[in-house]
Length: 120
Image (cartoon, rainbow, N blue to C red):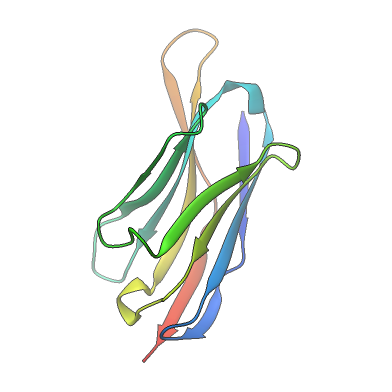
């Protein structure tokens, strides 16, 4: 089992910055990748950024050059630094971990989400 707790959301003006944190606990060793997703009202949940066990990162085209995903292994925490925020970034942001099952296959875990609101 993996538990994820997000923090760092809030209200910010366009052009501002926020840093989200995702603290993982439980079977940390089984995690293959952690990603940040977001879901705006009336829209599907979408991948924002992903970091693999090996440190490889991927970003949605809409956030490239503005958002940075990173991790602190000593704190079991993944961060999403969001700069030059736009009203279109307004959404609930979720942390997701994909972990290997002892019996084979993979298990997906989600955090509770944190609201990010960008005012124009």
